[in-house]
Length: 187
Image (cartoon, rainbow, N blue to C red; front, side, top):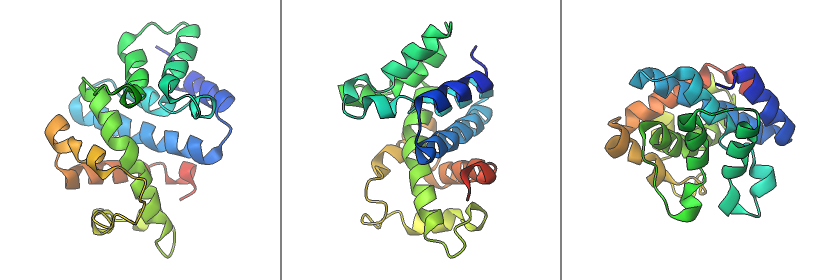
């Protein structure tokens, strides 16, 4: 399986935006935490989270190839783990009307939007620090559709039905994972 160092090298070679990289770091941390929760391979899930948007700068005007291009780049490095490759590719499936199928894929689908909401909540805090954000802070912004208007809350809410994790617990897991890498995120 591709190493985290190799995955980071690939991400950095294909993605120039620092903020997009930080988004990928956030999703990777949450995916690793969710893998631990489910007793799955933490390294594999972390790499899927790290690389899920790695081709965005190449595919933003070609959404049908989003995530497929990254999976192909990973294949070109010799990766043969189909769960990992399909996990990355699954991020682009919504452009084709497909739904996630596995716990890994649903975890990616649900947490991707949540990381953005958590960052938005952090940035309106007086100190702009993840350490001061609570689950209650995130939930207090949940029904304010004008706050972080681009965040698809309905995607996040699938955590209960598809993963068996209540929304409040899902937010707590994601927040804790992101707080654990706050220095990498500059928050």
